[in-house]
Image (cartoon, rainbow over all chains, first blue to last red; front, side, top):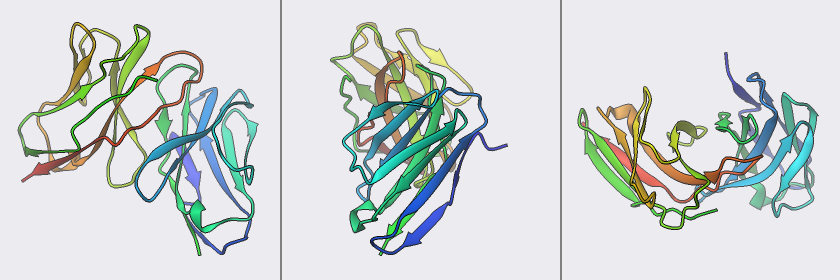
Length: 111
Length: 111
């Protein structure tokens, strides 16, 4: 059983499109995160949700909108995609204050 | 978050112990040392963490110096599958603290 899963695994799209990435965890955790890893392999936090409430919102363009329908899901919607959005997006989850576990990543390529 | 310093790369012979150092000279008393690794752009994988005592699990051992200013991750019998980028992270274990990834150490296991 996959603990933290993401869909899709790969996403290729045109500039200007709107797309969503989904994340689900079956660990019973109360906190979920989105991280972005760019082409230079730097991995940075984007958002964090605890019990469906936004806790961390780093300096991310407002074209990115996370949505947490319940504690087990944290989706990332991106409007008006730009070339610079090409990256690998990782979802993670944890019980508050404890170890974070990561998903396999979604590789986004904007053409 | 306190910053960490790691060597950019290391090699280790297969079957030998791999010792990965990390300096965290500005660590605070309530910050833990976490180790993650990333194998070829997969999601970061949790390895081990500790506060001040040495820790061991099925994957690795963590040795933290008495002054807590540095630590060493030990993979006792390295295999080719241990080739990865290893990240040392210090983090307050409160609430929903993000993980701040540095550039890590690229460990290559040599056959």
